[in-house]
Image 1 (cartoon, rainbow, N blue to C red):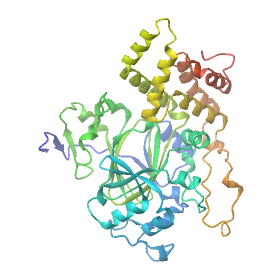
Image 2: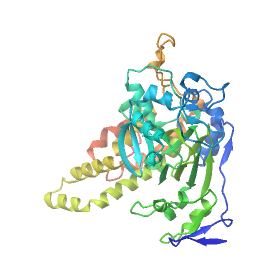
Image 3: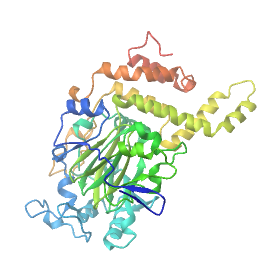
Image 4: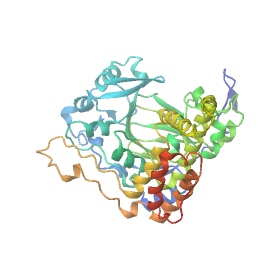
Length: 449
């Protein structure tokens, strides 16, 4: 039976076939790689994956007496949650992180506030608090840069440790792709795919989420060339339950095709979800939720990331063709190409945070130093918890947790060869980088160019 709403969309009920995502209590790296990295398929993994995380003890309130790790700091907030799911331990968050400045989203508008101010608003239970969502909070990075010494609140699960993005950013920059999200029931993240088709993993420390996932083959049916997505109309958020989704949408004639491929999954507290490369997704908090998220990448999705960079570069260049024409007229004898390339790459970096230099340097860093993220060793009490050399060490990755070098090289060489032979690769700024990559890839005698 179909029901039409006031916006001209038809709402489907029983006619929608619900797709499912694999749920596992735990998973080995070999199984994760074969069934999810190589096949680019999502998976939800149970609490065993994160059983040793300290934040499970300290960030959760409303435990039974036997489970409560620190009764003196129990949660006193007023937010009501579904039975069986934790409430956030605001007292702990205030004591340890209250003065940290966090990024806050309010109906799509971004601002910066202290966590203390945000929690005060949440506790007031007014309408404003129900719209505030702490997003993309670099808590791990803030702690690493501070003088605070405390127990690490989490460590990256080993199956996700082959992480080119965070390896590079933590080694070479003052930024990273490790985030904490906190928000009340009803706060959400609009339909999107992650930067340059990177992977993401997300673990619910507190509360539950609902995810809508769309595989790459339906991207053309849910997006437009101008960047608009079908989620911009609140199409998914406004549905009353996971099964009821509009059957037809004005202006999106191929939506029924995407709808048939859509996966809806409810992520429980303690579960981790892997979102594959290029999958569009939208996320809704079903309760007050605190999650830890990483964007990440490696050789398995490098080809996808490379082609995403190609598309982004062309899109930027197409948008400023008038600038190119002016440069050509001004430099009738030639020599305008370097300036044009610099302008386009600067705009690309402003838009997404990356340019070609970033991607090439990321490949170089991870070919030279394949490793897992170092553990976040920040101790609460240096006398009580003895400081060790782990503070500065970088642990070599277990060879069983990364693919063999031939696999990595075979994934990288076609992309780097394509780049070296392109108009971008002919820019003088990349000559030394390409030469170093040729050497690392064992391609010195058979030049990429």
